[in-house]
Length: 256
Image (cartoon, rainbow, N blue to C red; front, side, top):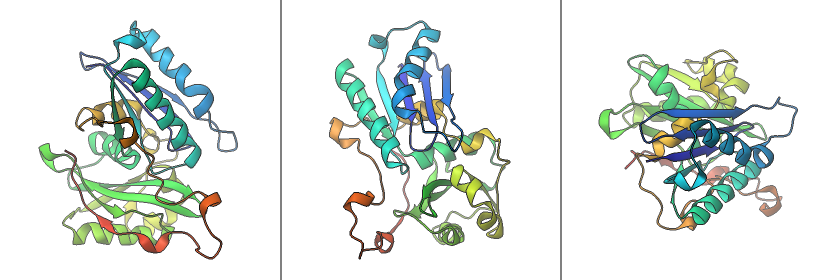
């Protein structure tokens, strides 16, 4: 099965192509922090470049996979709208993949030591983060613990405590993602280690999006693949509400 996967939940644009023989090709666009993200202008051209390198046509695709967040509102809208459009135009399967899981999976596969869990942290802006803790669970996939709301950085230690309470008992924790870089001090104070700033572990990997899509059941309808915002856009928030911080609940799940 040939899968095109991409993630636009962060400042970067990550695209991957997984071929029928298991080989994977990747492209990334990493604009400087002060530059505008290139999701809308670069995504389709990057995908076309990958298909050209592989020598296959768009019509050869069997599945499109997309990171559904949480992350930046505009990036998620661009990525999911593009994925829906491709799936509909090509009459192929569409799969949504959690963006936090994409970050964690790459670290679990390539960097986490035995007994070490991974805390994936995405910068939610406004001085907040999206985060979830993961540990490998054999053939069943990675187990997850987190909150379905944005967090203040001082709550990152609470996520690790929650993970222990829910059976994710790890000797050490590795924190990855742009949120881990921004709030390194909070994480290190909580006992987690953070890779250097230039590490690839802090950026989503399009090949991992494709790989995870192979483990998840495809959505039956395009509308089932929707952005995981975890809070409402500013235009929909009332000044008196002060956000959605009190509505979170703990979660623990394993992929199908």
